[in-house]
Image (cartoon, rainbow, N blue to C red; front, side):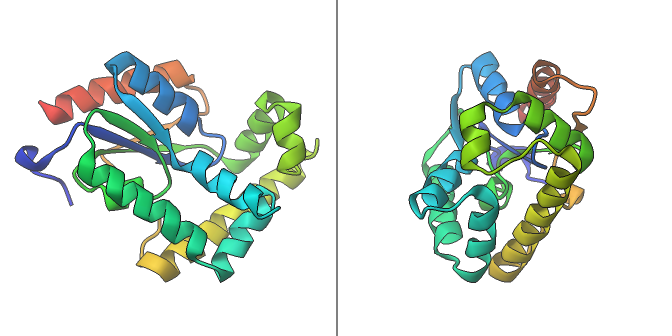
Length: 193
């Protein structure tokens, strides 16, 4: 469903696969536009870590206990109703903010696993229990994506990995976060005009 211009808000929602550069791109877009930035992934990580879980275990836990997803999603709905000039990196913000400019960043899991292992700091790798084996970690990423797809299908009847939900899709394998941000800003300016 495309949003008529009269109902569009100055909110950009950026979803995507792990390692695709959602957070980095979202921060760059916010900086280029002078907008605020919010990450629901950071909020989700805080919530699962407060339960003593790593990210993979937290995703599986959330399949059985929807309280974490419901809390994150309620926060997104509240933000969508009250905010403008905002960039959000989130798997589900596009759903809660249909009046936003919706972006999806795509990346193959094998490429993502190598990128994450190479770029993530040691503390976060330890907390999230990410080893050195990129092939093994790519499998973990695919399991996490499948878990998230099941959770969102059960809770809301949607799959955030279906590209048709988005106004812009960028494969970031050969695109830097700054280049992706430039593409988002240019497309957003055309969309909002």
